[in-house]
Every structure is written in C-alpha cells, then in structure tokens.
Image 1 (cartoon, rainbow, N blue to C red):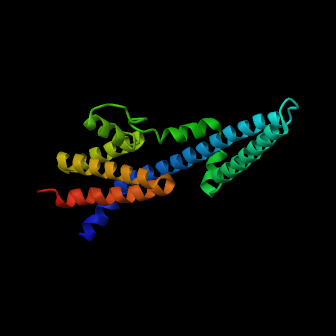
Image 2 (image 1 turned 180 degrees about the vertical axis):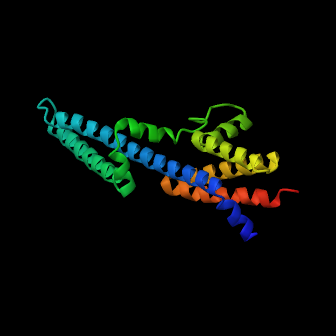
Image 3 (image 1 turned 120 degrees about the horizontal axis):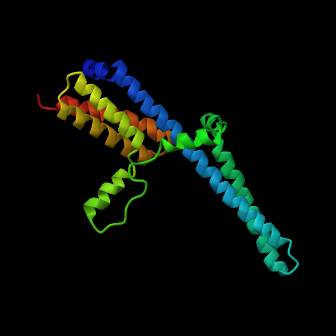
Length: 204
C-alpha cells in the first residue's frame, strides 16, 4: 500500500499539479490575509483622524473631547497592530512588495466557486452553496486537469472523477476550517490522503 501511495503521489505530473495547487493557494491566502489587515488598518486610521478633529474642536465639551481622544488612541493602536500583523511573516512581506495589479491577481486565485453563501429556504441548496463558498475555482481547474491526466493514463473515468472530487472537496473544506496558508498546506495533504483512499478502495 505504501509503495502504491508513493508511486501515485510522486508521479511527476501529479506531484507538479499538487505543488502548483498548494503553492498558488498558500500565496493567495497570504495576499488575502495581508490585504484584510491593511484594509482594517485604513479604516481604523480614518476613524482616528476623524476623532482627532473632534478632539481639537472648541465647540465640544471637555468630556466629549476626552472621549474623542480615547477613540483616536484606540484606533491608532488597532491600526498599528493590524499593520504589524500584515507584515508578520516573511512571505507576507515579500508578497506586499509586488505591484498592486500583481497582488490583485494573486488574491484572485483564492476566488471561490460561490463567492458568498446564498440565502435560501432550501436546506440542500443552502448546504451546496456553503460548500461551494469554500471551493477555490483555480483549485477546481487544477483538479480537473488531474482527472483528465488520470483518465489519459488509463484510470477508470469514474474512479478518476470520484478520487479527484473527493480530494478537492475534502482538502478545500479542511483548509478553510484551519484557515490561512497553513490551512492550504494541511488541506492539500488531507486531499492527497483522501484521493488515495478512494483509489485504494475503488472496486476493480
């Protein structure tokens, strides 16, 4: 079983697809995480600036100006913490040096099949959209190419689709549960294991 697992996992083409999926996903997760922290920092600094103007206003009472100063300081501290978090890792600092268009393209890799869960009264549709909101489009395309490669290599089409789908779905869901770049790696490893399990127990 170990030999079959290693031979399948380290097949050059499949390994390249897996590494591409994990690397692109992790990079996108870093870019998205950094972007969220920076957006939070911008909002906090905007609040701090408005509070600063109120604190300097002579039309307000001392008590209200004191409240404004407290709001200003709180938001400045929150903004500083968010900016520190945005640049907390070497990967984040590297990604942040890229031009804005490049960073936008990297973040797009994280785009999900269903951007946001759809509000609906149908439990089935609600569940499907919830799952779809965790499945990345790029990952699905890479999985599709992997399924095609397996079929071209002689694998049963049903087995290839079942294995690829189970690997993609389980990996994406676990990755989303863990979150961030670490989640991408953990999800990728889980996906590889699930895909192998489907192949191993597929009836001949």
